[in-house]
Each structure stands twice: as C-alpha cells, then as structure tokens.
Length: 342
Image 1 (cartoon, rainbow, N blue to C red):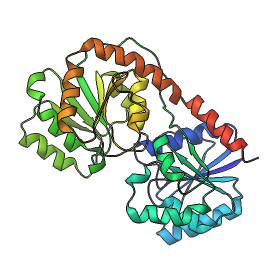
Image 2 (cartoon, one colour):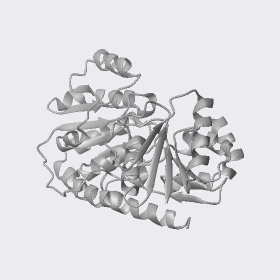
Image 3 (tube, helix red, strand yellow):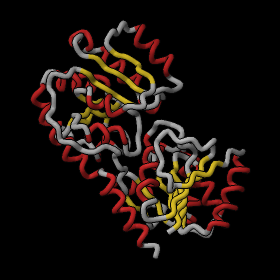
Image 4 (cartoon, one colour):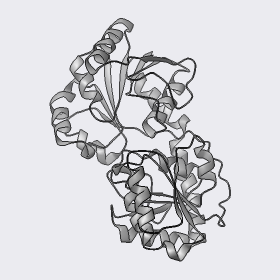
C-alpha cells in the first residue's frame, strides 16, 4: 500500500515530529511510505532508509501546487495530514483522489475559532479524522461520522527497573512557549522552593519565551530551577529524574508524559485540555491538578517530594500504563485501519 505523510517539518525535537517518524519507520516495513515537508527536509529523528522524504520548500501556493501534482502522479492509497492547525484544511481544499486522513495533534478546543469554523465547513472532504483522546473525539463526531481515537507511540523500551527514591531531580521537556506554561511552573515552584534546596527542576527545550522565563527565575531569586536548552539525549534526562511535571495550558496527547512513564517516572500534570487525563490517573500513577491552579500544583509537588514511598508506588503504575503505548501496539492499530481501505 502507498502511504503519504504530509507534515510541515521534521526538523524539530518535538512530539508530532517524533510520532511521524516512528509511524513512518514502522509502516515502511510493509508499505511504501513517503513524507512531504515544507522545509529543507532534514529530520531531527532517524528515519528508515526505506522512507522517502520529499522537500517542497516553497511559498504556500507553490507547496500545495507541487504536493497536488505529486499525489496525482504517484497514486497514493492514503494521504495522512499531521495537522497542527491549518494543514488539513488546505489539503481538503485540494480535493485529491486518495483517501485523506487528518491526524489531529492538537485538541479541537485549542484551535482559533475561525479554524474550527472552517473545519465544520470543509471536513466533509476528509475521509477519516484521527484524534488522540476520547474527549476530543466527541467534538469531532459533531462534524464527522468517521472519527477514530489513536495512540501516540513511545519510542522507548519499557524496562520495569526499580525506582530510585534517592533521586531529587524534577524534569520537564517542551518548547519554551505560552502553551507549555513554564511561567506557571516557575510561579508554583516559587511558593515552595526554599523548603527543598536539595531538589532542583530542570526544564529542557528552546523557544520564544526563553528570555522571559530566565528573567522570571532571576527576579524571584530561585536558585534551583534551570533552563537546560535542547537535548538530543532525552533518555538520560528521564533516567536521572525522580519525577516529571507538565504545566501546559493545553495539549493533544502529550508524548512527554508517555515517554516519562516508559521510564517509570511518577508524573504531575495540569488537567488541561485534553490529553493528560487519558494518561495520568489521579493518585494512581501521579497527580492531576486543576488546570492553571498554581497553589494546587505547589501542593502536589510538595506531597510528591516528601513521600518517597508514594513515588515508588506511582512508578510501578507508570510502567503499566506505558505498555499500552508501545510502538508494536500502536502499529497494529494502524495496520487494522489500513486493512479497511482494501
């Protein structure tokens, strides 16, 4: 079967790019898989040599003209749009002959109003909508009759190692942007950091809010929270950590939570729209905190820090949850969806 993934870029060390690469690599073992991007075609993650990457580094109109020509020429069975905003809308306007699947990497409610207005009008041209959570599926089922909940695969092997209660490092990984809410995390940590000088928070990533966040840390005089920049060795970050914290204002299905659980990390996350509640069961494998509630986030951090046996218990449950997001499990679901095209 011939499959085309369309994504803006593979160059970033981010969740949607990693998912696209993992799926392309896995599916290329049985199918012909190509990826079209809008930049120079470089990938931050290693691609199987069987996967064709095509770069149309052009204007918006030039890109979609070249893309439509390629789809028409190659005769793909299915085109999968890795949609972070408007990409699927533009593909829907192309009226291609192949089956068009929109893989929604961010939740419906996170879009601007006019984007959802256009989805309501144009998504009848999309053959299948892939979403990451049951809650998001409810939104899309109001505008489409073929909505499927899929899981993002974790790239890491689950080792079920013994949790080390002596570690005192809290980590978070993501772009330094408004969405990820690191300003909220800094404000929450400011409430309790003086009690836990032997602990530290490390934030990995880069983005437009870097200077703002650095300024916040300095003005509050916090001496145990660090902006570490990008990393190409996230497995070492998880292995060195005692727990993972996510302070996002909104998400799709957060890869970082799945990855952290693959290493048995207890997690603390805001219960933001929409993904965390499908990964974190409150007081089972971590804490779900009311979205953007700084005081409750501080309470959850303090409770986790001061209770090593609770962290150990949550660690075991994290391993159990992570198993359902294995690459093998997720690829099996994709194979079943593709089988439905025959």
